Figure 1 (cartoon, rainbow, N blue to C red):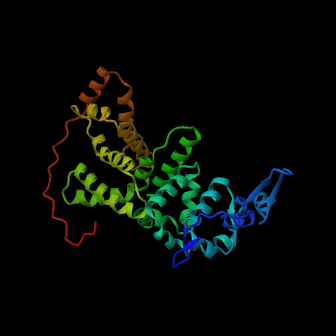
Figure 2: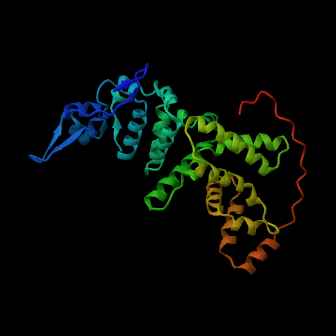
Figure 3: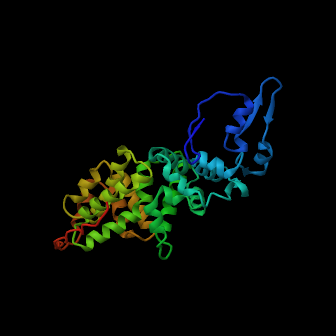
Length: 322
């Protein structure tokens, strides 16, 4: 197999013996073979014992194996979280320091890894392990930055609630879209940037659109995000300010929007942790299930809102790097 200067495997598509194949496996529990001649399990590396003990143990020298393929660190976390295994001390010893190797992995491959990490039914424990081993920051740098400045357990509460919701939906065989997952994981950096733009005089929708574009552009440097997911993700964000508009035709237009359901679920998530008004979320919960006459009545009962006076936005400084 071909290696890069830093030890990373570039090409590894060769055939060999069973003995050769064992040493190309990542973990001992993944290097068990079944002999159909005598119906026995062939175990060269103590995988059966590790399976019984619930241990993820890397085959070979951990640092060398991680340098060959840094994604092995993510695989260790994924299997440990999903199987409830602990990571062997030698296997985890260098993980805290080698996360930077993930920066050399193509962003498209890291997107696929994020899907496996967070859409496998163990998103909460995966998230906690990724942060423990200092790996999350290489997948979601903006989110890690926001989490490092948390106050009163926020935004960590929002992220955890979103991941709990993801695990719950998967357990109930309900669909989970990557767009919603990314919308939740990147919400806090988006919200913070949006607030800066609001303070500068932008309208809520304008602030949401500009901040969303900036955050998306920066995120794709870490993990790619196909347009079929990034567009609905930004729709979820951009619809949040529209939930405030409950007079005239606005509520009906929002209800007819193709992304209404996902955006409404997102509003509920925000309301659960106190980041959005619970009464607002309840209003929309009620509005959906009523007939036309009852909806009209709800809209008519809304007090008139003062027209928001927009300040002229200051031009952004020239040293921005978005």
